Length: 151
Image 1 (cartoon, one colour):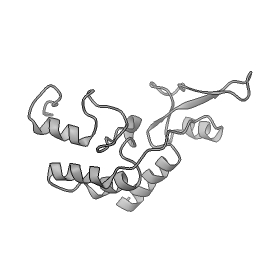
Image 2 (cartoon, rainbow, N blue to C red):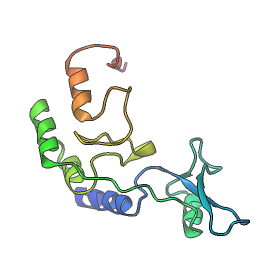
Image 3 (cartoon, one colour):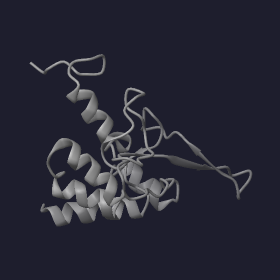
C-alpha cells in the first residue's frame, strides 16, 4: 500500500469518527427507547469494540458504535517548530496527516499518535504534551522518562 492509500484510509477513518483501534460502544435501553449511553463492550478490556472485528462490524450495522469526536489539524507553525527543533522534516506522510487530517490522536490502541503543539489528546508520562516535549526530554539525556535501550 502506497503513502496516498495509507493517507486516504486514515483520512476516511478520522472523517467517520473511527480513528482508534478501540471504539466506544453505545447501549440503547429498551425501556427508554430514546435514551442511549456509551458503555464498555464485552470484547474490550478498556471498553468498546476492536475496529475491524466481526463484533465491531455487527455493532456498527446496528448503530451501537459511538463515533469519536472530530480531531483538529495542526498548524503549519507547530509542524515547522518541531522540524526546526529536530533539524529535519517530519516523514512526509506524518506531516501531511498532521496538516490535513488531524494533529495526532489517531492510530493504534486508543489513538496514540502524539501530535505537535496544540495537540489535545492523551498525555504521556504526565509531562509529555506533544512531540516537541518528547524530543526535548530525550535530547536532554537520560532521565526519569528516558526508556532503557532495548537489548
